[in-house]
Length: 173
Image (cartoon, rainbow, N blue to C red; front, side, top):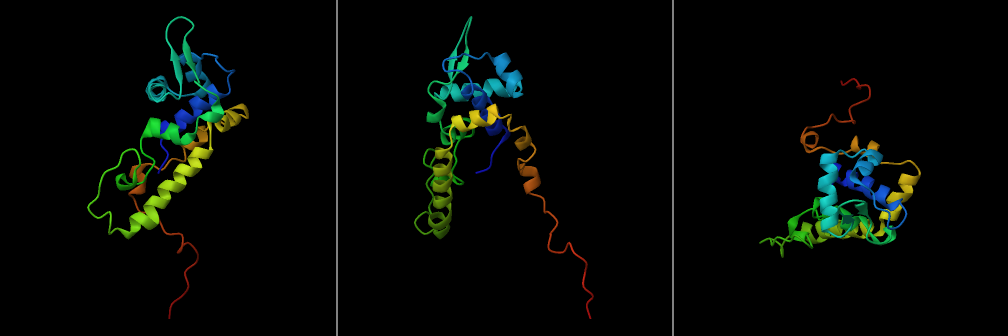
C-alpha cells in the first residue's frame, strides 16, 4: 500500500469536516479554501466519499457537506478504500477486489508475506478515525507536508545512489 495525493486530500477534507459541529453543512467553496484542496480534486473525492456513505451531501440553498455519523465511527480503512480502492498489495489477497491466482495454493510468499501485510494494514487503518484527523486539523496539522513526501512511481523506478559507499575510500593494495 502506498498513499496517494487523493488519500492526503481526503484526509484534509475529512479532518476539516470532523472538526465542525455535528450536522453543520460546509459548502464546497469553504471546504476548498479551508483545506487547500483544488476544486477538481475536491469534487471527485467528495463524490467518492458520498458514494460510500462516509460524507453526507445536501444540494440546494443552504446545502453542503457533513459527516453522516460521529467522526470516531469513520475509520481510515474505509476512507482509503473509498477514494483509492484496495488496500491489499496484490489482487490475489484482496478482500473486496479479489482475483484468483493459479499459484495460490503453492505460493509461499502469499501466505507468509502478502496476507500478513494486508491484514496488518487493515488492522492499523481500522484503528485510526476521522476524529484523529480532526484533532490534527484543530492543532494546525493539515498534511500539506505529506504531499512532498509521497513516493511517485516514476522515481521508484530509478536507481538511487547507495549510501554504503558514501564515506572516504580505503586504499587497496
